[in-house]
Image (cartoon, rainbow, N blue to C red; front, side, top):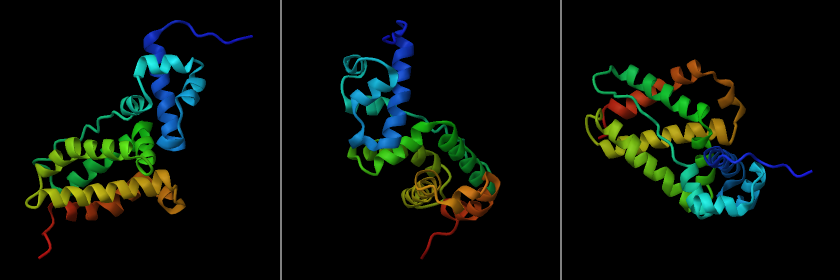
Length: 187
């Protein structure tokens, strides 16, 4: 007996996006196919194309997310680090979009560009508001640190990185983030 879906365009679109995030995250951009995504949802691949146009357009829709970084102005440096890390953990753990995008960025120019845009439009302005000098350098170092941390913990799944609970990880990372954000610049 063939499985049929109730007609619900909004629900089907959401299901396709969820399946796309899982596939792009697990298989990478290059190996993910529209046919596989459609199969995961139980729809015809033509419906995926109808809703999203192309694989690249589906990826762009699936990779959209907002970090919602806190306003760091006026906070003591240690609180800045804690606020940033708590927000990054929320993005990494509560929403599979970031980790899927991070995985895909390793093999896809499209995914890497999407990641650069998120960084440029969401992270850099927040960090520049509190950087005492060299905001671009501080922002790129912060991005390198947190993306490296996320990659080690969630993509490579290094056991030592996964063994640290949030509080321990924050304690270890706090001085690094403080230095990057507001510490003295090297001579």
